[in-house]
Image (cartoon, rainbow, N blue to C red; front, side, top):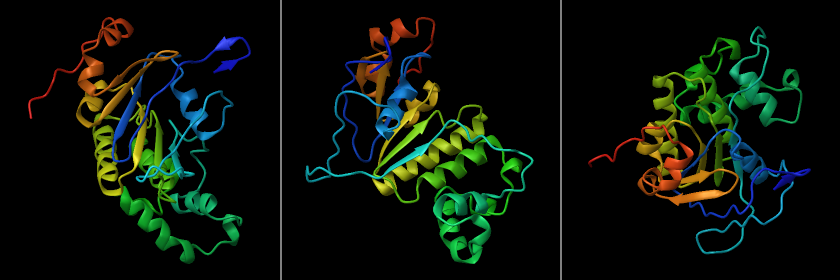
Length: 232
């Protein structure tokens, strides 16, 4: 893919499967976020994206997306419920009945163990709580493909672990395909099924150990100590 004369990435070819968490890693400027935006249709690109169901038939997937962060006025009185109402209805929030949509929002928040936050102001949420709210929003409607663009950037270790555990539970319960951008190799070693090493092109694609132990990984992250293989 090119922007003017600048090549963002090329020769990108991989397959992700339902019921798997595929991690997308690489150095800054490797094209990771741009790749996700290409999948979302926000960036024009050459090549094709093909989606198949379990029987091998083409389908038009529902795609959920969680960005790195949400920009908003932290002093605003906007609540979690208000955010969902604005995103899930076509009418202005002040014309919507909160009673009508509250049950739907509560169920969405329950998926990420955050139903207690429904009336909390957005500005009063911690970084980890906000990302769980955005995850819940991305799950309505339930997607076939979930894209996570560094969703735990700036989140503390406890919040990070909670988020990854939620994603792992969703993967198992809903059999969805998940593509995650992350720099936290320790968490990926625990939770990812496959890893894509990207730096303008796909350098390596395989299991966590196949990628982490590869010479391509050592070359890209020359001074990095990678997680050792875990004994089950």
